[in-house]
Image 1 (tube, rainbow, N blue to C red):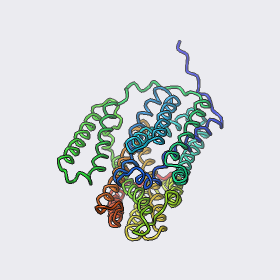
Image 2: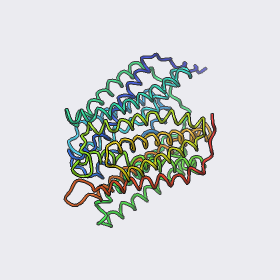
Image 3: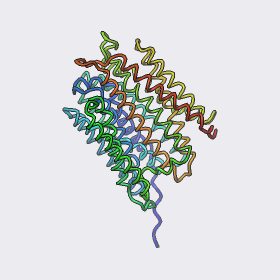
Image 4: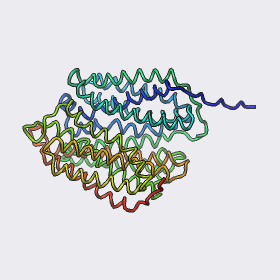
Length: 465
C-alpha cells in the first residue's frame, strides 16, 4: 500500500515574519528606480526613451516569470522554487549595483524581475502551512509589508544615491533580500509538491511571448530615433507582427498554454483585460512624466528637484496606492465592481486632464499623482477580483494571468510612449524636453482613460457581497 503523504507542518510567527521581511526587502528593491530615474539618466547619459525602457524591463520579466513559477511551485514545491527565484533576484541586484553602464543595468533589472513571481509563491506557502483563518491574516500582512517596502524604497533611494552612490541604492536592499532569503530557507519547512499537473510548461509560448514583448519595447524605445530610417522601423514592426502571430498560434495549439487566449472569448475576461490595459497605460504616463518634470531645472518649466526630493513628492501617491486595495474591496461589496471601476476611471481622467492644464506648482503634481495612484488601485483591484470570481475555480489562474499580462503590457506601453514623446519633444542641442511634450503625454493618457468608460458602462454590476 502507498503511504498517504504527511500533513503539512504548521509554522510559527517567526516564519511568517521572515516572509514579511522578504516582502519588505523585495518591495524596496523594486521601487528604487522610479524616484531616481532622472539621476540615472544623467549619470548613464540615457535618453528619455532609454530611461523608459529601464523602468519597465523588471515588470515585463515578471509577467513572463509568474505563470512559470506557479507551475514549478505546484510541481516541485513552493519553497524550493521561491528560494531559487530569490537567488536570481539577488544576482540581479548585485549586477545592478555593480553595473557601469546601461546594458548591464538592464541585465540586472531583467534578473530582478523574478521577484514578481515570489509574492504569489509566498501566498501559496502561507496557505499550505497555516489554518485558513490565520492564512488570510498572514497574506494581508505579507502584502502590506511588500507595499511598505516599496514606500521605503521610494523614500530612501534618493538620499542613498545622492549621499553614497547609485550603486548603493541597489546594493543595500539586495543585502536585505539575501538576509531575508536565508531566514526563509531556515525557518520555513518544505511544502508538498503536487504532481496533479501532468502537462509541462508551455516553453514555446513563453519564448514567443518574450520575443513579442521585447520587440514591442524596442519599437517604442527606438521609434523617435529611427523614424527617419523607415526600413529599420518597418523591419522591427514586421518582426513584432511575426512574433505576435506565432505566439497566438502556439497558445491555441498548446495542451496547457501559459496564457489561454480562448478565455478572452468570455465577456468578463476580455472587458477586464481591455480596461486593465487602458487604465494601466493612463497610470504609467504620469509615473514616468511626473519625476521627469520635477527634475527639470527651475529656470525652465520644472522645479530642479533632487532625487531625494522626488522621493518625498512621490510618497503621497505610494500611500494612496496602499489604501486603494482595501477601499476597492469595500466599494465592490457595497456598490458593485462596475461602480468602483467607473469611479476610478473618472478620477484618473480628471486628474490627467488637470495635470495637462495645471503643472506649474509642485503641489499640482503631487496631488495629481496621488489621485491617479488611488484611482489605479481602485480599478485594478476591482477588475482582478471581478475576473477571479467570474470564472470557474479551476480557471482562476488562467483568467488572472491574462489580466496580469495586459496590466504589464499597458504599463510598459504607456511608459515607452511617454519616453518617446519626451525624446521627440527635446529640441536639438538640448537635454530638456519641451513643456509641450509633457502636456501632450498627459492629454493622450487622459483621452485613452476617458475612452475606457465606453467599456466600463457595458460591465455587469457584479455581485455585492
